[in-house]
Image (cartoon, rainbow, N blue to C red):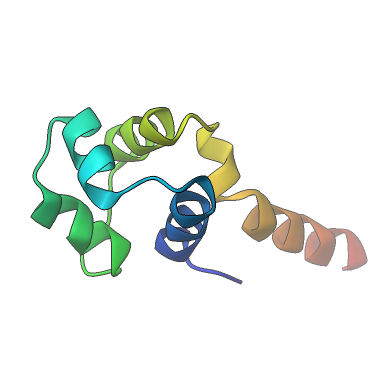
Amino acid sequence: MKPVYMKIEEIRVSKGVTKTHIAKNCGKTVAWYYGISTGKRIPNVESLQMIADALEVDVRDFFENNLSVTLNKMQLA
């Protein structure tokens, strides 16, 4: 399973969005987003929603693969 911060970064890079853009759109500092992007800071639900809005994606996109793996394991049991 890919950690949430890695999924966020994957989406950010694929969309060509800068860390500065996300921080600015969230009303936060670049250092704040850098902490999230490196896994040193764990975002709360509100922060995840702000990041999703800045990336113009659904917040569930950060978890989609993780939830699918978990659900598949539950169905096999």
